[in-house]
Image 1 (tube, rainbow over the protein chains, first blue to last red):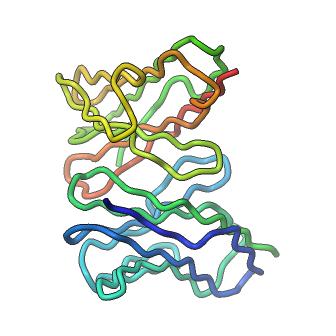
Image 2: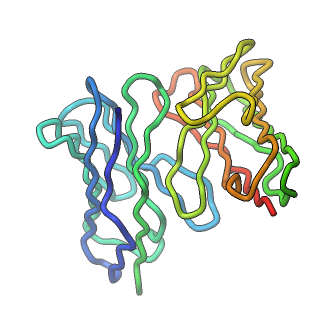
Image 3: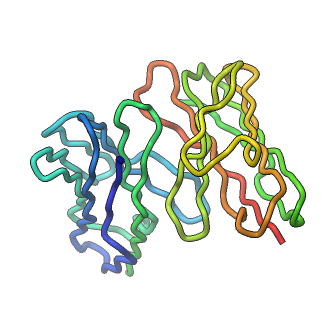
Length: 111
Length: 114
């Protein structure tokens, strides 16, 4: 079946460091890929998405590129801030329009 | 986007009782889903709520335990029946809105079963 694998956390970085959170997937067909973020005490929010191979999703300085050849959708940010501390979830939709989520990666950014 | 509200926002319940969670949306909805997020875990899809018909359940979830209703396009309920401590989770509804190719999530209902 469909699945999403994320790197385990927590990931602890200093402010202005470079961030990469790895995400790989297994799915039939050509899924749409998403990154969701859950800030402390808040609900789940869509961060960015990509719907086909080689698409790059971007938002708030975060980027992820849909790599079909490596079945990956790694999340990157060039310079993290304390306010980026949150749990990040990679997810996919194979067209069922219901999401399959990865296990989540907690990011802690220290001043 | 839309305003998605869930009631209650949290509850503490006794083993063996049932709790009904409501989800209301203020926009045109094409799809509605219910997810569970167990403590420290990711989100798992429980079911797709179908308007006017039985919900479509994922493997491991059954109607007797998680009955779902969706009497109209913008409202749905999820009942957690005969609860046990293992049902302690955050329950979230999500919707796909007309014209959007993404899902929006409600704030969640945090359930603790003693």
